Amino acid sequence: MFLLLAAQGVAAAPARRLVSICLPGDQLLLQLVPREEIAALSYLATDADLSPHWEAAAGLPTTRGRVEELIALRPSLVLAGKYSTPGANAALREAGIPVVEIGFPESFAELREEIRAAARALGAEARAETLLEEMDARLARLRRQAVGEAGPRALFVFHDGSTPGAFATELLELAGLRDASADLARGGSPLERVLLARPRLLLRVGYREGVPTFTGLPLPRAELEGVRVVTIPFRYLACPDPASLDLVETLAAEAAR
Image (tube, rainbow, N blue to C red; front, top):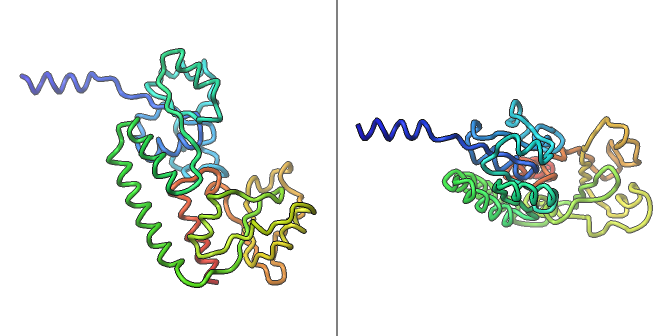
């Protein structure tokens, strides 16, 4: 009788309704909790240009993060950007909805701490440790491969000629490449700045390829003399994630070439 009543109590317990309104939160929910507990992800989660887990997000409800929309979802917990949605975060708390704010890691070390902090809030510590063990094993292997002479100079470049920050530098170093972004000139056209930095490997970030707003800038799409040009997906740079190591492995293969 005791076991029967206990089983009925478990069955009657309401399922968690977890919601994310930021891209880092989307990635954490998709990797740390059962799919059936996800009530909604941000509308960015299914964007293949931005999310490395866009395929896993397919079919799940999404939200634009409007407060009235979120309250209607009856969430038991919301993952929100620490800096991107301060107004919504405050309004949700006023409505009595728990909010966990997610930062934006700039290294794999910071990403590790972010995953563990989110896992504590979600009660997903065991799953997080498995995820981190897999990430750390890949990191260790890549670091062993990168030991030795410095590889060719490489440069990430966006459609407007700008370059990403510290996390991109870590990705290049893990791949055995040297980041040439410190040598970018301050003036001149995007193409002039790139050429003056003298990269051997130019990594064009393929953000919104084919969208008129983002095309037409004078950045090379084909080989230049002494420079190999490779287009890479922006989703591995948009938000640090263990899946960013997929890009490192691609870059390591390019470095070997």
